[in-house]
Structures are given as structure tokens and as C-alpha cells.
Amino acid sequence: MTAVSTHDSDRVFRIKPFGRSTGSWIVSKPALDAATRTIVTHDTSAGRMAALHLDPRRGLRVSWRRKLSSLDFSALIGDAHHRQIAIPDLTSRGDTVVWLSERTGCPEPDGCGSSLPTGETPRPNLRHLDKDRPAERSYGGSRPSEKEAAPS
Image (tube, rainbow, N blue to C red):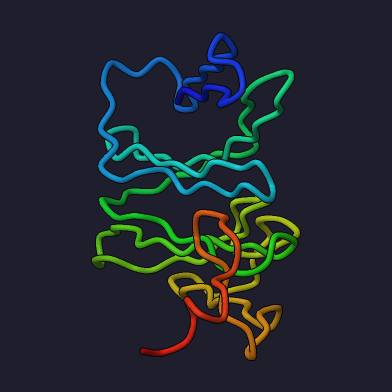
């Protein structure tokens, strides 16, 4: 993963979140969360997913890693304090959508001690979304203006 400052092109940060693998196969773009300075990426060849935190002074560091096999894009959902990741995970039973805390990479926001029965898919925690306002764009952009959000 490479990050370059838009203010100073000499400031380049690089990290290999999945170690020294001999090859990499990243089908989708990473999910970028500007509000938390988090990059969520996965490598199908490595069978892993990771969240990277960008510190503008120190660079990139891995916040967490987990096993994941996917050829799909991930979606960031919810406000910055309760952000979740939705992504299909290919298992022996087929694709299963998993909902993960952006902060921990776990189905539970406070850690991986999930109380879900084996094989049950975690469900999204959407109680933090405001139903009367449009959702934030997944790339961390601002909410659409009234003119953009109005049906035509």
C-alpha cells in the first residue's frame, strides 16, 4: 500500500500489510475513511484483510488483520464513531456477507469475543444512522447537498 501527500509529493509512505508474500492479487480498490484516517484493504492471494491507520507524520501502520477471501469491494457504513465494514467472504458454503467493526475488524465493536453461534452471520448495527438524513458517501466525502439529494 502506498500513500502520497497531496501537499508534498516527497512525503511517500509504504507498507506491506500482508507480509512478504511472493505475489499479490488485489481485485478491488481499498475503502478510504477520511474521518478516521483509515484504509481498509484485502488481498485475495493472501486470503487476508487489514485496516491501516495513516498518521500524517509517521506514516502507515496496521491496526488489525483477519482472514478473508473475497473478490468484492468492501463498503463503509455508519458515522465515524460507529463505522462498520460490509464485505462478502467466500467460504466452503459460498459467499457470506460479514459485518465488521472498522476499529477492531471483529463482528463485535469491542473485540472478537463474538457471542454468535458458529456459522451465523453478524448483522449490521445501524442504530447510529440518522434515518432523516442521507448517508455519508462510503469514501468519507461530505453529505450531498439538498440539490444533489433531491429526486429529479
